[in-house]
Length: 380
Length: 196
Image (cartoon, rainbow over all chains, first blue to last red; front, side):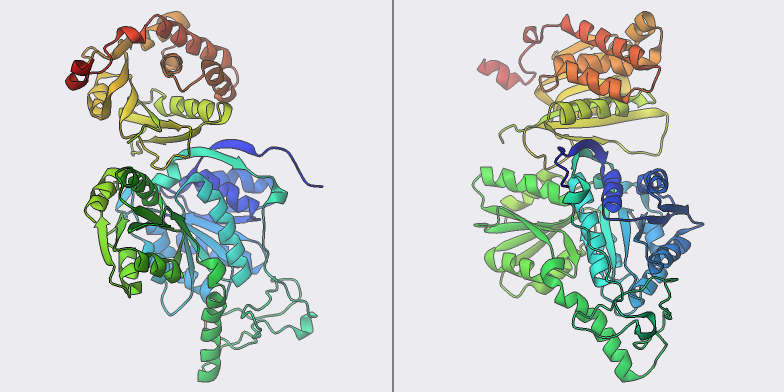
C-alpha cells in the first residue's frame, strides 16, 4: 500500500544527507577511514548501518577501505566509502580494480584544499581530474557533483542506481561548503524512491558465463557464495573471467567497458539550466560554486544582462552536448572553479564555435562569491 | 538587488554554544515556520577559544548562495567577535551584544543585553548564556517566531536540561522586549540619514 504520510522534514548537513540517500538507495556496507571534511559520513553510517542489518567497518586506511568496499559489493551488497583528497589518492589502486572487475560501488570525495594534506578544513575543487583519471589505464567512470543538501540526497541515490545499472564505480564530488551547510531535507517515503538493483544471472550456475557479451554490454552479476563460480581478477580477462593477453579478447573487453557507458549517455549526463533560454552570456559551474553563480546570474538579470547558468551535475562522462549547446548560443562563457582551471579546459576542448571561454579561479581555500562572478559577468 | 533574504550571524568564542544556537534557530525557521534556511559555520581546527561564528540565512524562496553577505542581524557574545565580524554589517542592520563582555559597541543601531550575567544570576548556569541570547535574537528578528523557537529548543535539548533551557530562552525574550527598535536610528549610513 502506498504511504501517503507527508515527507519527514529534517535539518541536515550535506554529509548527513549523503548518508540518508545511500541508505534509501539500499547501501548496506560502508568501509572507511575518518577524514575532515568527510568524517560525518563515516560517523553517521556507524550509527545507522547496524540498525538496518548493514555493516560498518573502520579500516586501517583508505587502501583497505576501498578493498573492503569492492569485496562487499562482489558479495552482493551495495557498498560505499567516503573520504577527502588524501584518502582518495590512496583509494585509486583499488578503484581501478573496481573498474576492471565491473564492481558497482560509490565513492564520495568531499574535496578540501590540496595537494597532500593541504587545507583540511577549507573547500576546494581540485580533485576533478583526479576523479576522472586518478587510477591508471583507460577506464570509464561516472563522476557526479553535488551543490546542496537536497542534491546530496538525490544524487547519492542516482549514484547507486547508475553504479548498479552499469556495473561501474561512481564517484560523488562534494566540497567542504556543501558538506557542512545545513538545509531542510524533506525525506520522501521509501516507496516513492526509485531504486535500481544490479541484474543477477537468470541461468543455472553451470551455464553462467560471468563476462558474456550482451546487447547492453553489462553482464549479469552473481554474488560470491551463491553457487555461481566465477573468477575475479585485475588482469584483462576473457568472458569466463580468466586472464587473457589475446589482442582480440583484450580489445573486445575494453570496448565493451566503454560502450556500456556510451550507450547510457542520455541518462548519465545530467545538467541543470537556469535562465538559459535567452542567455547571451553564461556561467558553467558545479558544486558549491554553482550556487554563487546562480545568485550572480540573478544579479546580472536585474541589470538587464542576459545571463544564464549551466550547472554540471555529471562531470564525467563530460556532458558535451549540453555544454556545446550553451557555447553555440552564447557570445562568452565563464567557468568559475575553486582550482586552477580543470573543467574550463574540458569546456574549451568541447568548444567548436566562436564563443569565448573565460575562467575564474580561486586557490586560496575560499569559496568564490556571487559578487566575484557578477563582476566578471558585467564585462562579458 | 531586491532583498530576498534575511541574514543572521551569531558569533562568540569557541565553546559558548554558538553553533548549537544557530542550528536550533535554523530548525525553528525551516521546519516549524516552513521557510527556506541555510545554516553554515566557520569551520576550523580549534575546539575551544578563538572566534566562533555561525550563520543562518532565511528566505521565502529557495536560497542560492548559502553564506551571509550583508548582515541583517549580528549577535556578538564577546568583544573579539564583535570587532571581527562587524565589517559585513548592513547600514540598517541590528547589532546585538552580550554587554557582560562587549564594552566598545561600534554602532548606534545596537541592543546591549548582559546575556552571560543573566544566565549566571537568574539561572545559576553561565553555560546557558547562548540560549538567553537566542531568546533575544528570536524576539528581535522579524523572521522568527519565538514559540517555534521554543519548540525547536525543547526538541534539541538533552533530557534533564529542557526546563533550564526553556527558562533561559524566556529570560532572553523578556530582556529583549524592553527595547524599542523604532527608537534606534534607522540607518548608520550618513547618506540615508540625510534622505530622511
